[in-house]
Length: 452
Image (cartoon, rainbow, N blue to C red; front, side):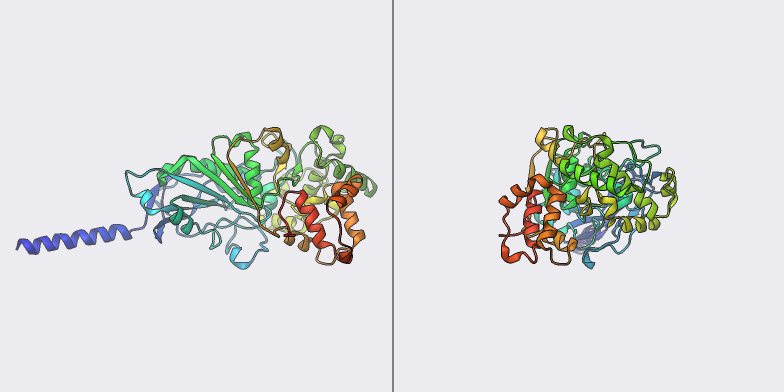
């Protein structure tokens, strides 16, 4: 009788243990409880809100913490991606998108959330690339299961606002104007979320490493150049980070007219390009500053979205659907006239704005002056990664005369001889100098573009 009872108790214990191990993982956050799923030794939580939806009155505003909820929130599928026209391979494009998109995914080695005697694990915080107008933190491409399992770390991957909704700048007044850098604000809010909730997953808030690629790598550099990032992370890894690429400027008051005379535009174009890589003290007067064109570009977006830009247009932009804003942004991003003063912005129409209270300097200036956060940093790049940008921008062969014009536009007339001496042309390639263009322009922006 005792033997039968012992066997029954043993079987019951096995059943209870199996049931416990197969039950979905749950974690209590500061905003509510989430319920995920288990896969390959990793507890996975997808579509976790880290900020309030940036809709309605919160459009074109900095991110704020999420609203609380009751009960168990299902977090087994990716949240919607931020509005975009995705031109990446299909596997890297989001299946759904919406303006309510500030979600993140968390991948936790299973033992870290169940062992009471665990050591708090380091956290890897991933910022996706996509030139600030496409991509998302979910899907197969950014599945952190293997990384979490193999390296015994917690992996966090985030969405952040993109394109016009994430980066438009119209002026410095946050009450009536678009102050830009909303996508970077999202990244900081996600990092604050990690600081508040790291220990709930068994993570160490003092061991957070941010890492990103391309626009994600530039985001890493941007966060390092913001004093408000202090204490949010302890280390950084920037992959394919174009550290020498000039950000848009916000150094002057808004202009009053969208259309400027062509001659003035050309003069401004060459004045700005000659001063583009010099310190702020060497910049021309405010009327000719890059912000003149930056805010003109914002007006072009508003006009293409259907707003009357003869008067303040911010209220109109606030009342549009996100689809209308996206349509205007897509139309404006290739507007050459709007970018006359800052030619390189054609390669990155949306992105962080320098010269603002939160980001006072260009990234290179911040690093060289020592104003950037003094934290361990790893920089890396891959071979030939700049080729796609040149061949995307110039689908047809670039002749010698065309490349000369590019030299003037980007580096200024006085520097052509120096540049060509450093990167001589091969006469055999005079009919198509795109590979030479890749080598020179990208390496000067500190990108590893082509293997020679």
